[in-house]
Every structure is written in structure tokens, then in C-alpha cells.
Amino acid sequence: MNDNEPSGHGPARAVTVADVLALPVLAAGHPRVVTGASRLDRPVRWVHITELTDPASFLKGGELVLTTGMPLPDDVPGVRRYVDELAGIGAAALVIELVRRYHRPPDALVDACRLRGLPLVTLARDVNFLEVTQVVHALLLGNQADAMRRTQRIHEVFTALTLRGAGAEDVVRAAAEMCGRTVVLENLVHQALVCEPSGGTVEEALTGWEQRSRATGADDRAATRGPAGWLTAPVEYQGERWGRVVMLPARADGPAFGPEDVTVLERTAMALTVARLIHATPWERTAHRDALRDLVGRRHRSAGDARARCAALGLPTDRGRFVATLVDLRTDSGESDLESRLDQELRTAGIPALVGSLAPGRLGVLLAPRPSQPWRPVVDRLCGTALGVAPQAVVTVGSEVSDLSEAARSFHEAARVAEATPTGQPLPPDRSFHEQSDIGLHRLLYALREDTRIQQYAEQQLGRLIDHDAQHGTDLLTTLRHYLEAAGNKTTAARRGGLSRETMYQRLRTVERLLDRDLESGAQRTELHTALTALDVLRAH
Image (cartoon, rainbow, N blue to C red; front, side, top):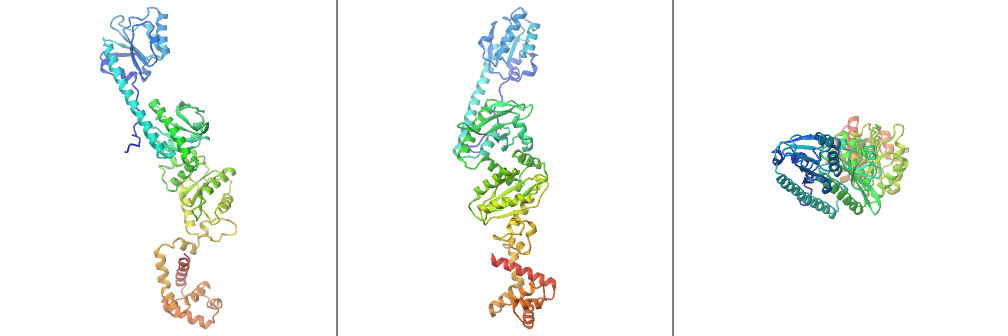
């Protein structure tokens, strides 16, 4: 791991009331929790020894208050007022020693602490309060020093990311690794653009994302919001908001968000703002591209992860209809412009889809039409847009599939069609795109043209005939072509070649002798026709 990478460890846990009670210096006093046992996870900011009747005036909140009980009021209203002031200021707990004045906690004190939810702890034995403060304060100061070092580390990591021009994915990943929590970047319409899960899956993080996100409400600063307790921060620049970054709780019973989590999220939002200003490609386009590439490459951990991720980008995954379309530009220019136009056209038409670059010069479109909506007119419309930007573009489609997990197969089919389609290949009269049913022998061999086995086959079948033509100035290859195209009808072949029947017969006998073939055999004619088609493809290529 280099100095620019996050350590992968989350922030240290704050010192709690339970932690302090477990210290040997306090454990020696046999502490007993009388009230507030469920609130011992309160963080302790400081330890305060007091023998005053109004200690709250000297507190700022978060203190563990130690007392011998000597100043405790004798009357019930006084005890209640004493506890109310401690609870009101936010004291972490009240620890009373049962050695000097009391040997059991007063009922009024117990009732008041229970009513206000203030943890009350009794000590059965004498404890050196000064030693307690020294031990706890040393622990707290050590934690503060560690926290300062970790905060500095946070700033260093995000500064390094910004300086090297990191994209949104790198920034979100760093935040998730640093806190050990799932971090998500969403846009203004609550689509999850980047998700970096930690300790869980994409499916767990993103299922029902839009509804859950909207339930958190709006935010102007980093804060914990909504029924699920998400930590969120806006991503904005000079009053223009682009989205927000969300940190999800680790689990229902996990630790609450701490100050370091807030610092990480704030720095994440700042780094994302800079990344947005540096990189011209919109986040949505990058998110679509990455989602498509992962679908085609089957890189999702599970089908559930794939569905949750695509659904969080606004693609309906429960319709049961998906069609993959590829646009091969056959050029190095116009890709970004066409990607933007296709996306805009689909949005305007209200057709859910993912649009993104799969490779240089190749755009992918995954359509999710409604059950009653025909997809062919949609693809024809996309073809018109594509050909308007890149007239030499070739648009191909795969077969319709009923589950998102099969989208990769549809894309692979479209890719095979693209490989078998030369630029300028004529289209059927009723459409402007190519599909699997268009692939005949010629286009199949075109797709395999770089395979040396095809070259070897053509040479093995026809090489001697071609050599003879080259050495003797004959054109027996054309005679064979006419004969094969006439399906073995010698009369038709002779007419096409402008030859007499006798001359045709003589030439065919020469072809049979040179190739050691029986041209009356349908199987052998098929082999020669395949070889001749392969030769045409190879020569054209």
C-alpha cells in the first residue's frame, strides 16, 4: 500500500461509560449499574469530581460525574433538581460512592435518574477519584491524539486523490475503505451512480434505492438523516447542486457515526466536486458505461447485484424484456456526441435504457421496453440518429431476452453480427439494422476471415485451379463459379459464361482433373462453393 492509499481501517470507537467502568481503577470499587443499563454506550468526554450541590454549572456535557454523595440534597425536590440539571447538560453518567454518607442509593435519586434516563452507578468500596481522572483522561487524550492523526490522514488521502485527478469511482472507493462503510454517490433524481459496498453486497445496498433515498429528505450539510439513519452530504459548487454522497450504517446494531465519519464524508463531497469540474464526462454517462461493461463481462457478484445496480440507475428490471443493440461507428470520431444524442433521444421518447461506450468506436444500448411496446421501431429510430452522426455506422441487435442476467448473451449475439457485417453491407428493405437472421454463408465467412483455417481451406480446395489459371492464362475458376451458381446445370452455366455446351463440358472435365473432384457430387459441389465464397471474402478483405 502506498502513501496515497487509505489504510482501510475505520475510525476508533469513542470511550464509553461501559469502557470506563471496566477499567481496573473503577472495577476495584465493585461498580453496580442501578439505572440506565441500556445507555452505557454513551461516549465519555471527560471525568468530573464534584461535591457541589449544583455541579451542572461547571459541566459542558459528556462528563462522567464522580461524587461521594456528601452534597446530595436531603429533600426529594432537591434531588430531582440535582438530577435534572445533570441530565439537562448531557452528563454521561453519575457515579456515587456508598462509603461515607450512604450505604445504599437513596430512592429519590434512583427514581430521578430512572425518570431522566441518566445512568446511575454505585461503588461499594472506596475508590481514589483522582486516580480515576488521571487514568481516564490519559485514555481520552490518547484517543484525541489518535483522532487528530487520523483526521490528518483523511485530509492527506483526499488531497492526493484530488491532485492526481481521481474520478468519482476512486473517491467513493477511498471513502468506503477509510470508514469500513458502504458509500454511494447519487444524482438529483436519486439514481445511484457509484456504489462501493463494504461488509455487504450491492444488492443489499441498492435494493429499493430511490424510495429509501427520498425518505431521508433534503440536506444542506453533512448530517445523519431519515428513518434509516443515513449520513449524507451534498455535492455542489457555487450554489449549483449536482447530487449527494451517502454513507450507510454498518448494520442495525453497529456503531453510530462519529466525527471522523463526518470528516470523511465532507472531504468526499469536496473531492467529488473537484472531480466533476475536472472530468468533462457526466457522472450518469460513466455510470451507464460501467454498468453495461459489467453486464457484458458478467462481472457482477450475483444476479441480484446486477438487478439492484441497474434498477438504481433507473432501468426497470422487472419487465422481463431486454434487447441489446450495438452501434459500430467504424471510425475514431463522433463517439461522444453520438452517445449523448442516443441517450437524449431515448429519454425524450420515455424509453428506459442504459447507453454507454463498450470499447473505442463501439456503443452499447440495453433497451427495457414495456411488455406491449415493440422494440424494432425503437432500434430503427436509433439507427436514424446513428447514421446521421456517422453515415458509415453499422447497427446490430441481439435476440430479446427475458432476464437481465441474459443481457450478456444478447450483447454477444449483436457483437457476432457486427463482426460478420462489412461496412456498406446492404440491409433488408424493411429495416435499418442487422440481426442474426441476416448472417448467411458469405457473412459467416467474413466474420471468420482472419482465422488461418479458413485461408487453409480455401487454398486446399482451390489452390491448384488458381495456380493453373495463373500459369496458363486460363479462367477455369470463373467457369467453376458459373457452374456452382447454376447448381450443377451445365446448360445454364454455359449460357452465363457465353460458352458452348461442348466447351463447358471440356472445361469442367479439366477442373475435375486438376482438383481431383467429382462435380456431379452434391456434397463436393457444396465444399467447393464454400471454398469459393471464402476466397471471395479473403480477396475483398
